[in-house]
Length: 137
Image (tube, rainbow, N blue to C red; front, side, top):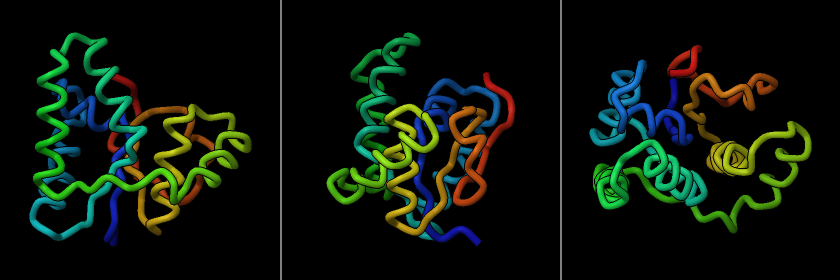
């Protein structure tokens, strides 16, 4: 049973863009909003959502509003100062993107589960992740 869920960038972009699997992400957001699950996001992930969302054509203000709405629904921002060293170790050990390392380090610090998509940065990770889809959009 997942009690604490950390959102990676891919599921949030999938949700914003109504990509395959967005319904599963919406279910997780609903579980956070209902208080069934504690939800978190790394500020690095929040940064990625803003620039990736803008890059794929969403107006920056719309992405900001969506991120604010997630916070209103109960998705808390976890301070990067609490996990920066773990992020560095993960980045080095798994040769993953910095944002992915911070997301995973956030989940680790919270003893939670990281919601990811088909991102191959997580292929070597055996524990602590939940995939909402296995194929990229």
